[in-house]
Image (cartoon, rainbow, N blue to C red):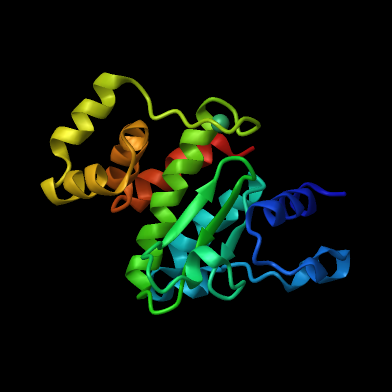
Length: 182
Ligand SMILES: [Ca+2]
C-alpha cells in the first residue's frame, strides 16, 4: 500500500461522509484532487504549492466535489482545513472565489509547515517561539486578530496568528515549504 493510499484510507475514518465504496483500490482514483487550474489567476503559484505538498505526501482534496460534510454544511463557513493526523488538506470550493480559495490554500499550507517543524509523523503543530508569534501579532490586522479570538479556542491562537499573517504572502510560504520537502 503506498503512502497516498494509506493517507486516504486514514482520511476515511476522519471524514465519515465518504461512502465505504471508495475503499476499493481502483476507486481511490475518483477522489477529486485540486490542481493549480482550480485557483484561476493564481494557477502558477498554486501549482507550485500543490506540487511541493505532493512531494511531502500531503494531498489537497476538493472538499466540495468529494462532498465532505465540513464543506457541505449550510450553517458553517469553513473554507478549508488541514488534518495533521492524516496529513491531508481539504479546500471547500462551492461559491468560493479564486482569490479566497488561494488564500485558504496558503493559510492551510502554513499549518503543514507547522506540522513539519516537529515532524509530520506526529499530530502536533509548532508555531515557533512566543516572541516570534508576539511580533507577528503586533503586525497583524486588528480585524484578523479579532477573528482569531472569536473563532478559535485559545490553544490554537498561536498557530492561527502565524497562518493568518502569512496567508497573504504566498511566495514566502512557498519558499518555506520547499525547505521541508525532500
Ligand atoms: Ca507535527
